[in-house]
Image (cartoon, rainbow, N blue to C red):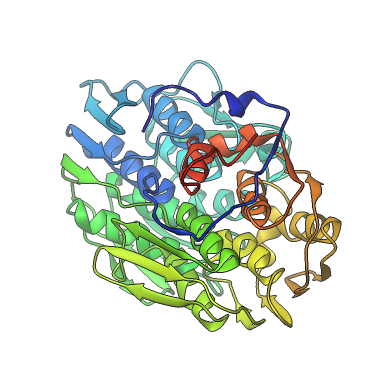
Length: 440
């Protein structure tokens, strides 16, 4: 990863250059944001030095590293050249920071920090940017008191800023899984520091289950055992200690999705090394969805290759992989027939309302989209150029950049918003072109 910032991250807009020539390439994707955040959280609670290699160094993860350091019990060292984060205990107890903990638009870190602040002496206030202050946290706030933590929304609306006090001692609690699986992950991870066993019962159906699987996989790798009854109940026995040492982050399946989508819409081949069929990242299953649409895939133990083909619309439930819905939606815009994407209500409370955003921007490009509370129906056609509003949402910017590889005149506003999860995205997109930059 280059330590030199891409000047396009400061631009007001960027015009994507359509791809010329056959696509036949290998793309190296940055480390998983979800795993980087989980390893950071666990390392900060382990009491041992931990080195996280292949980490994603993006706005979200850098905010999180700074936030955990604010409690005083660890320090973090970040090497941008090697994409490595070192988390080292200071020997001091966790104490509430004197200043508010600000995490920008980093949703996963904020949710993890709400529970984590329950281990700190004193009163912690955690907040974020304007959009973050609209996002619902009520289910997590309601579950924490039973475990000894008093967490309340300062404005009484269930959203940040959140004031946290008390002590995460463990016990039994119940939480809804309908809004975000990250609430459940927050409780599970922070239960490793509880004095008593912690039992977490899911009151209803848990959304985005693969993200909880990633949490459990990260804890297992770091020596923590979690007992479970499917996705209905999780028990974290007290007295466990996460190991320190060295962990390696696999490539980000969400970041990979844009280059798989590129192969799909251009009809070429893309190989992503370092991630394979055994990944716990739910977004890997986008490969199977693209196969249903007419592509051909090769899933090995340590690489994924996608070959584009004639595209057709499909019916698909994407509840388990919501972050790649925009990627599939843009592929659907080039497919024959209608693609019906369902069970995606959680996209309404992401960095923006992604159902509304994708619908609006595809319509700008001349694509027919029916919008529903928890679904989109996209009828493929021949998209035309348009100026794309990105809503300060990294996934909207990267998704519509893929559309610009095949369509003349696609202009991405606020291209710098990709720094949230993929700061080198524009350079990586450049790498698809054999002899010229992909943007101008």
